[in-house]
Amino acid sequence: MIYESHVENISMSALDIGCAKSEGYFLTLVARNIKYRNPPVLKGFAELVVSALIERTGSFTMEIQDVADDLGVKVDEIKYRLKVDGEGFKDLRKQVRRHLAIKYLLDGVSIEKISCDLGYSDRESFSAFFKVNTGFPPNKFKKYYFHYSKCLGGARGICGDQKIDSTGLF
Image 1 (tube, rainbow, N blue to C red):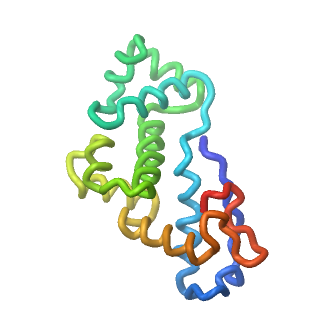
Image 2: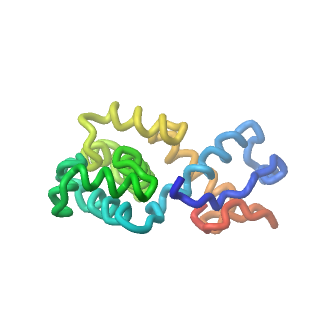
């Protein structure tokens, strides 16, 4: 996986600050997904492909042929060079979509706009993608993120003396 995990194990004692212990599962799940708010860390040709995918967000499709045209190479070259880097186009596209979906969602962009910007035909298709890749429907993810970031000490992610997320994103 190209994302580095910065989330430490969260013990149930970390939740003894007024949050319901039965919600510990949701805290852990949100914490595991927050790392995807940052873009993938890549090197080589895969980095160029991810940049092209991000640039196509909004009013363009995110298909391999379009990215090949943007980069001035053939589709077969993209496939070959990504394989050499140990990556695949569909996986990179999925990772970029997950990254942008979480980022936009937490920045307050509407689900309808996110769906359109990421190339989904409708809100339901995007919501299904989001749930499969994060464990939450978009609205619940946003709700739990803001609930727990407030509950656990805001953006610093500190719960008493226990650090929940070493990236400072939670």
